[in-house]
Image (cartoon, rainbow, N blue to C red):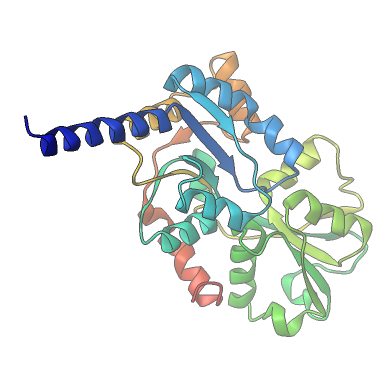
Length: 284
């Protein structure tokens, strides 16, 4: 064998060893829709489950904001991300179509946002928001900004022109706090976070409650980069789809993720969100 061929063989073996070693850890992150401590608590059991079922060390890597979650997957700093529908669309555009959605909660096929206000505010319908101070969540949030803004525009209300002030809280729990404290007159957020706060008695619905619920739309998903080896992608997908409420581990993970089960998803499910983003001027 020539020195040239030996050099090529050594290079290929070296490259393969690097590739294999790079896949010894599965890095996971999520959009920070709630406080960092809550994110870690919510996804801790899932991390342990994936370690066992996928057969790799799994590291949960928190990020500071929604755009950071997008950049982390686009730049392959993590391998698996829990996206909102809009952040998935942003990552898909940003990567040139290299992001693959692999699973969503059954609830995400018919998701909704809610608008909340103090019960004595006099706000009863969307048109009552004109001239008011209104908060969204993150600017990149599907349920906390994109879709609420889209439905407002459909109702003939332009937040940038018709509201006294538009605020962005950054996360759904902070959105609720802004209304409870009176820093804003009303706000929009994820219906599942609202229901969680109500069920855990973290909000007094005699003082703050929902006055409008949006029509349904597709939302969250687990996504990977297209460069992930197919066998690993299939193993992760199977692990998510196999979670069920009939055993203690599955019930704990699904309950923490506000889910009844995970189902397969596909890019076409999120075209409506992309169209809404373009119509609202949030995608150019």
